[in-house]
Image (cartoon, rainbow, N blue to C red):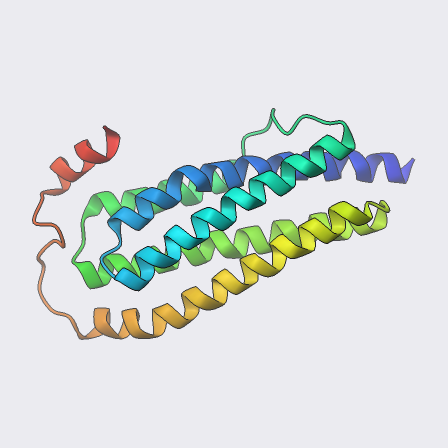
Length: 183
């Protein structure tokens, strides 16, 4: 009985992560486009490729389980993505924007690290060895991404701390940038 309940929870959590990863597939190109630091932009582009692999791994796990990955919307990730989009729309100066993008990305990574840690434990308890291996690989990649963001933040946060002025990074008004974002 306990295993059935755990398996049901495991599948629901996998669906939640699947939704979260797909939301990130859509959000990462916007974050990369908004980034003014070439290193940060490159990091987002690299993580997009990795995130697409995460989606493929999850699909492999769902196929092995005989389950559909669809049917659940990750509201936690939806909120994190919305906060990041709001910051971009506010159009702060470039150094502040990049520091804020790193902050938003790290919140996402911490959310994903927690989620993958849980489903890894569930997979192990349920004897889902192949899934456990795939999930552990993704968990390690998420941890590595977080570490890379921390390294980038060292330089970018110092630049933001040393910058002055109220100019926007693009010269566009927040309203015109918001319209472009919605288009």
